[in-house]
Every structure is written in C-alpha cells, then in structure tokens.
Image (cartoon, rainbow over all chains, first blue to last red):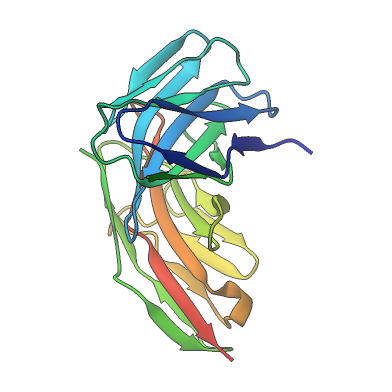
Length: 113
Length: 112
C-alpha cells in the first residue's frame, strides 16, 4: 500500500542535542510538508518542498532544518536552537496542485528529557 | 494572510444526533477547502474536500458545501456514531505556497 511513513513514533531529546525526524513516501508525490501540532491547536507549517532539491520556510521555521535530496524523502532536523521543541510533528505529501489533498503520516511525538 | 476559524469544542452529542461544526475562512482568491479528521495519537485523514464555490464534498455520511458568499464550509452529519468521536480540522490551501492553513480543530465526543 502506498503511504507516508514517519519514524520514530516517539523521540526524546536532551537539551542541546539535534534530532532528525524521518519522513518517507511511496506515493510518487512531488510536494512534501512538515507541520507542528501543539495541544489544542491546529497545525502550523514548518517547511515545505514542491520539488526535489528545493524547499522553502513556512511560518515557524526558526530552529528547524530540512533537506530534499530524493523525491521520496524529506527529513526534518530539530536543532538545539529550537527552544520549545516538545510537540507532535506531522509530515504530509501531495501531488502538488492546490486542489489536491495532502496525505499525512502518523506523526512523531518529540519530548525533551 | 489566510486564516480559518472553527467553532470551539468540545462538542458532545448523543448517538444518532445531528452534527454541525462551523468553519469560516478568510483568503485571497478562491482556495480549495478540506475537512480532516484526527483520531487519538494518529495523523490526519482526509474526510472531504471542495474545490470551487457551491461544490459539496461528502464522505461517510459527512457533508460540507463551499459557500463563497458567506466564506463558510460547515461540516454536517445527519446521525453521528460513537466511532465518529475524534478531532475535526477545517483547512484551506494557500494558493501561493500550496500548503494548508488549518483551523484550531474541534473535538467531537459522541456518547452511546
């Protein structure tokens, strides 16, 4: 079955550490996205990529970095510069045109030790 | 910028009751509109979508109509079930970035 795989499901970070969240899709989608979800809130856009080797900052990119070296992969690094990283992170992909829905992974919950 | 406003939750209903979750939006142009559902500890699943004015999206008994004149996309279901208990998100596509702008979500609790 085609879909989006996020790993790990749970992740713990010590203060001062960088951590990388994995996102892989086999839907052959051009566009990929990272969102952050905090309790009781909607999702906020961190980074997005419309095509391989290109990506743009979203609304809350500070303290995060991404790469898009392969069409199927869009890893997110949470750096030590992100002061409040505890959240639920969701990766999504879409065919690209705005009328196409985004498909979501099951998320990674990041907590600070 | 674009924004989506949803009714505050939680919404608590008895099984077989009628559901309405209000959603209004502010956007430039004519965005596509979506409803997503999230079950505990999971990602979001597309529930339905509408891409132009007066379109009606429907799925699993849920419906929503794209109303350009009132900038609304209210979610309705005639008879809810316990299994419909979840958080529902209204969203629109940002025409520039093609990313989603979400409302804050509405938690639905259906009691037997």
